[in-house]
Image (cartoon, rainbow, N blue to C red; front, side, top):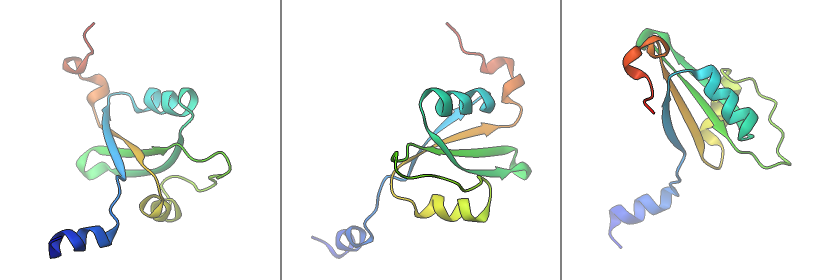
Length: 104
């Protein structure tokens, strides 16, 4: 094993997130929370760049989650948690963009 490969293995990397762009974040959050049973872990807002990120995860049933998304505590939990998150990316204005309509 090369030194580079050994160094990467020592870091114990994991798949932390996968991202989907969403047009209507409210409908998307409702679907993933209410239908899929996921938990909203954190929200990162970037108004200067006109987008927000919503992180959801499927937590073990015996793992309660009481942090408020968007807080420093939720940020720390997000970047240290085990498991994979779904990142929903909402770009401002796409909800009104006719070119973004889903075609049947």
